[in-house]
Picture 1 (cartoon, rainbow, N blue to C red):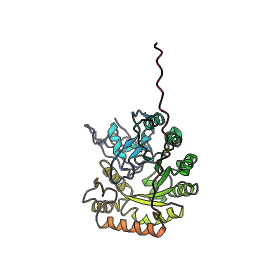
Picture 2: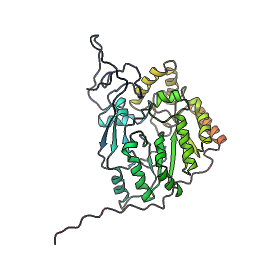
Picture 3: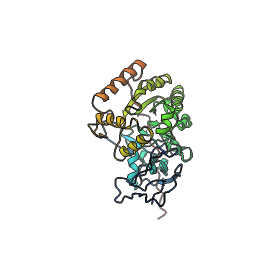
Picture 4: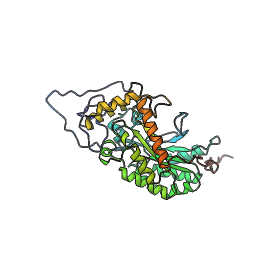
Length: 368
């Protein structure tokens, strides 16, 4: 039984935001056969807590590197050090991944976290395989590798240490200030063109950030990350992501200006994506925080998604379609060109320096 001061999975929340959380409810994942619904019979009402306790458990992964052949993703290999994310972003498209382990994409995604145990050992094993082909590995395409528990678990840092030893290229996407802790490793990789870092900036409005991304770094802190990494010689860019129509889209130019001023070399943007359970969770969040414009936001989303809340098709899922999507695209390119972003053709990260880790030597038999 789930009890977070609200309905059990499948039930509705009381629509009161919880401190430090983006989700308002804990709905059952789409693979669950049973759904429970809370009914107020007038006799007893559970007291609503101010927050939900955090739990951290090991994820017993058998392999580490995931591959994809998606035409609209600029990498083929990725690693997710963590499952779930305590940054608690209300819009996070990775939320449905919790459904695969029998948990809710709502509050469970923010509070029931898993870390990859023995991640560094698994990575060394996979990199040492005879058939391994060196290609950049991305960290941060699903959940944030520098979310708060990384300070204690250090999974991301241990993985970076392996990649530094092997001279393996890596790209990172984060909105966590903890990335600066690893500046020593990132600097070593940068000297040989083995790293690129993307900082996600959704808004420059601190109040909106606190409601939408309650546990992530502040907008000014993220700009400072861009500045510090750039000054240290680490190639750094900015993702204006996600762009939410009628809520954050008006900030596109100001975010790009601030990023360029902080030293960003490149920029891109991604339209709000609402796959599977995320669509209902985000609508709950909108209704609680911005009831006056909730329907307008979703109306514009549907205009760019072929009349639906989400469009998963390659080619349109990242940018959308229609007049509003075209306007966003034009605004981005005009601003990026004016600010000198994306002017240098990316040569790609260095692949030729890769040194596979020494494969484990099997123990010799003592039989004569």
